[in-house]
Length: 206
Image (cartoon, rainbow, N blue to C red; front, side, top):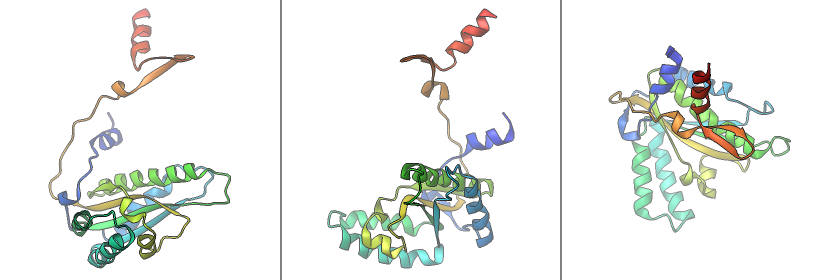
């Protein structure tokens, strides 16, 4: 296994409580986000929007979000809003990644959204490469109209990931599944075989 493959296999997510300061400095954050420019991009639309929230602005953002959550959605219980706020307060830095949809493009919205989601992984990998850690949280809490307004999002923005980035308190590893358990090889119409089984047969026949 070469160094790049090993790096990819050793990547782990660090939950917000496993991260601390320092967060990436502006120059480092620029380098991290620049990696997203290498994301697969059907039609070369660059359908990405990155909203960075530094630690000094997180508390002010949370205060606004808590009010917005409760105003916009009566089903969002105060306890859940408090829990969401608690998560975000611990974040060394936040990056909200959205697909910036080109409505008039022949490229499907789905492809544009997939590209933005792929950008999230590129950002996390780049952060890891610089010695930071991160995690990708869902965007349910920002899908409400007045929350979107607070974040400066327009109708064309489709949030795909709330990324928390900081320094791991403790570096750790994680065991990985065997990809063969999740893979099959197509053999013909409606026929597949377990991945690796045909290779084994061919080797035996040689």
